[in-house]
Image (cartoon, rainbow, N blue to C red):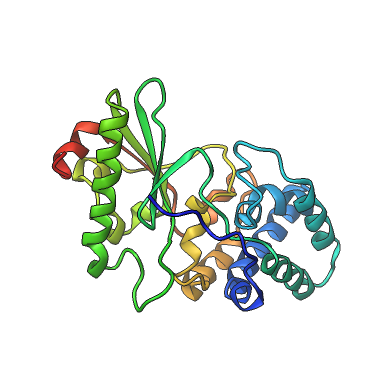
Length: 260
């Protein structure tokens, strides 16, 4: 498992890396507010990844932090888009890194899982914990390490939670070969697009816009901004270039895959 993450503020140099990513999210909040009629501050709070990125917690499980709401009201009150962006970048520089939520058990630099439900369903998660070096954590040259991390994680699950019956995931990453090749074929072959009413404040949606160093991907951002012109406020997730895909398979498939 990973060691405790630093709580030191990022500083402006590190925060500036995220400027392009923040700009994409603000464009989305602007358009969603205009098309749906919801307040811009609410669009920023509940439909972007800022609350989580700024280490204020998971909105799926906790109410928004008061300090964050003050920041958002200030940002939404600015008429100039560049000024809004400047305020967010400066505020981000003063925040500590976003840690894994306390209900997730981390393994290696990139993976974590939640404790299985009483029915034996295990949910897995990924986040990039390797932002230095010439290639990202899902590059073919790092496949052996990622599979070693997964072997450790599922071995821990098998020992600690022997009642585990199924594994599930939900991420845009299942659109990519680099991620799918780490898992049992039965698991990745099950992928189906996540549809229906849902929030868009997690990295399962927003992670597709950044490279492994945290810079915005110009091509993905450009496609998204084009899609925003036809945004349907009742189905805003359809604007994202890559859909969030659900995956599931019996735990036995993971025992076989990793030799447990």
